[in-house]
Length: 321
Image 1 (tube, one colour):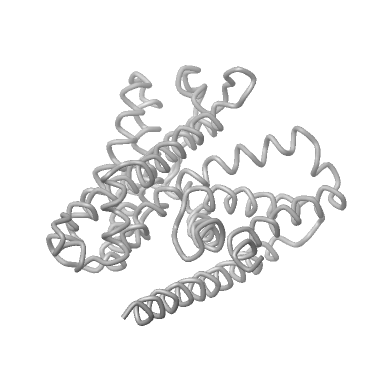
Image 2 (cartoon, one colour):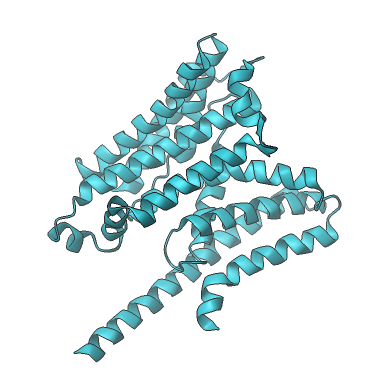
């Protein structure tokens, strides 16, 4: 029972939140509202999955929101200027990947802590975004070939959900089913031991930060396609929620470790919570208060889970001796 609760208690609590709002908040349980929550979850979850991949290697990327905003500006500028949508999409993804590569270079070659390196990248990306736009968003009637990425449907399912499914499968398969994923996990859990065992830990960190930037670029493209606009701060509202989704996800399924299923459930729970509070008439600032409490609580729970796991390992080692 203790093991069950450690893995699934947070997920069950999230289910309880959904049931509560379904019973009390007007129109919360409607099909249209649930579709809206799932679409909003898609943006958040894709961005959070990228952050989780960096965290797997014990690195933080605090530039995800600013990088996503810059990628959206570049993508939106090209679409707004009449360039082919394929070129705009490639440019948005390329900007995200380039920023991720720069973060990886700073961390592994220049030996700058990821906290500092990514904060610096966030400032650079923010400045570039405002330089390109002069503070004015790109808005217009954009081609359906581009906006359909986020607004269309396939087999009756919104395209945003399909993109989220693909991103989730990729992240899960990479971490769980490949040797590279095993190396990523080993690098995050015991970097020095992994290096001595022959794992290219610096390369793994660069790969993780590259993927984080790429996921930020994908989020940017989908945001721009959904809103038919691009602004230098358009992803800022997703920053704390993405971090909270990963941290809250670390309290379920694989307690104490970033994981794909936990991140997805947490992202949906956070969006459902925000939606339910709005429909219940709660003041806007209540969401920020709840979000802060979730971040602190999830870190505390994850740290406790890691501490218990470390104690069990030490006990097992001593018993074996």
